[in-house]
Amino acid sequence: MGELSTNLDPEIQEPIVPETRVHRNHPIDNIIGDPYAGVQTRHRTITENTSLYTEIFDTGVMETCLHAAFVSQLEPKNVKEALTDNCWIEAMQDELSQFQKLHVWDLVDLPKGFQPIGTRWVFKCKTDDRHVVVKNKARLVVQGFYQQEGLDYNEVYAPVARIEAIRLFLAYATYVGFNVYQLDVKSAFLYGKVHEEVYVTQPPGFEDPHNINKVYKLDKALYGLHQAPRAWYETLSKHLLSNGFDRGQIDSTLFIRKVGGDILLVQVYVDDIIFGSTNEGMCREFEKVMKSKFEMSNMGELSFFLGLQVSQRENGIYLHQTNYVQDILSKYKMSDSTPYGTSIPVNHGLHPDRDGKDVDNRLYRGMIGSLMYLTASRPDIMFALCLCSRFQSQPKESHMIAVKRIFRYLKGKPRLGLWYSKQQSFDFKAYTDSDYGGCNLDRKSTSGGCQFLGDRLVSWQCKKQSTVSVSTCEAEYIVAASGCSQILWIQQQLRDYGLNFTGTPLFIDNNATMSITNNPVKHSKTKHIEIRHHFIRDCAEKHLIELVKVHTDENLADLFTKAFDRSRFEHLVNLIGMFNPE
Image (cartoon, rainbow, N blue to C red; front, side):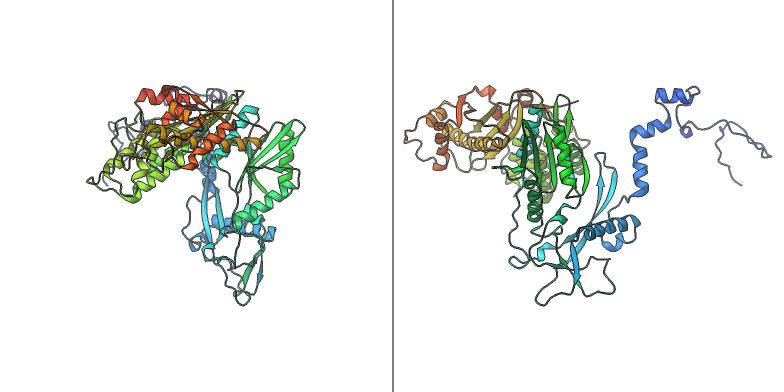
């Protein structure tokens, strides 16, 4: 018969005649919970928070299991595969029922001289911040690359908010002291009116068997059409303007409504909307205005927007991309790497290295692109990333090592982000600096700048200058002119908020640049500087800006122009207002 496998202790002899008994000796690995713990009553279990159910609930395992029971965990590769799963069939039916509800299209015969545009299904598993699948989303999109300009579409431009405008919005919210909310319009593009005559094929897998040769004529825009974003923006802006809102004079994606001393601000980024007001009643009124026209799928306090994680606290707002950092570390297999204290060494010596060993160009560019997306909340990696991005055409092994060092720096500080404190001053100030001849490729200088509202960092720049400067003064003068342009843009943005800033201090650490700006006399040593850089003189004369001398050690723009040792690097990171909750 062979040796019987039981859960008895090996020293216990089995009787020849089997006996019915209860085994008391079990392997400890098979026991759930602490075997040495005493008897737990229900009340004691709940109060001490040690029950198995409580542990499952707190760790989120229960929520994961509940979602896994009702949604699919895998994304189908094609519609044929999706039609074999009831979860995805239901998702596709929800999409088509939304079309019928909004009167998106009509089934007609194809007129002569028109060619229908193909359609296809796009499947996506929606996840929460813990990467748990919470929804199966099926989207029917149009193959817009088949559209012909002048026939299927004309104007396609739609205004889009800059990421700096989003940070400025949040900084203003902390200054005034109101909460920021977000809402998601369900199938937003389906509300846009199509003015052109556009025909599309029937959705794959849902063809009408009695009218197989017919096509759909679009009345509303579908995702994938060139004119879809413009059509949605026109519909949304008309609805808001008709309900007492004013469009920003500078930023067309900002809508303002003022009632007495209260203000309501609405910022639009395509189909994502954030809003806030000094009066909570105005926020509720805005929700009613939106619900009267559109179907809302999600509303609440702002927590995630354009890849930014937004943590609203009593004393401020914390902007970070912690989840994204963990994702890219896992994607490029850097989760177990050794952390570094800085993003780039002081004596990095990065140069073209034409005799170096080649690396995978596609991998290198992918890593650079992933890090670029992270700079929305991580100015501390800006200089190192811009330096590494100069070698994308022919990356070498030394360049790959430099990029991996940035990942190792992120490994050590994954939760570092921007901190916007409440109830602080809202004074507008800016810093600029340059690294003369810092590029080893062509000896062009590196420009760096940053702009603050109080202690809130809202904008920063790091860029190689387009021309070769022949002196430190010229390099500093060019970067000061570039910083002046950013100052003017922010001043104009703030006018829509009802704030008028003039005489904004621009801190620089070069006396010659201040002399050239304040002295309108043309010198022989400055006549070769391009005319477009001299507009800073005009801005200074109009008192839009004011150049202020600052010591090099106190110039915060230094962080964006060169590498530093760990102590100096961490000092600058703290000064620009970055926050690490760990």
